[in-house]
Amino acid sequence: MSQTLSLAADVRVKTGKNANRKLRAEGITPAVFYTAAGGISMPVQVSEAALRKLYDLNGRTTVFTLDVTDTGHTSTYPCLLLAAEDHPTQHRFPPVAFSGLD
Image (tube, rainbow, N blue to C red; front, side, top):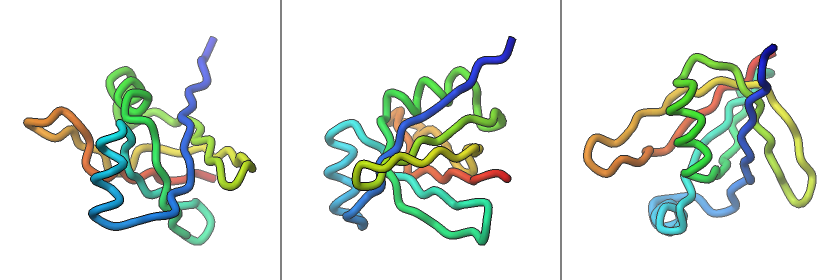
């Protein structure tokens, strides 16, 4: 029996270095989601603890659902971790990229 993996994300309103620093101080990782249709990018933010758990258990090659919430509406996308590397000394992620699948 397979288990469906999911990760909750919220659309980011503020972008840039200062906004990302403030997010990280709150335990949130900035990320970008690239949709499968047309490669449209969407800045999102995810819980660092939830992302760490997903990454440690499954790595970058497991398909999971990304539940993106924007102004109260949630959309679900199947995706992969496109770019995620663990920082060597701080044990956190730099900005992460998710790639949507068809």
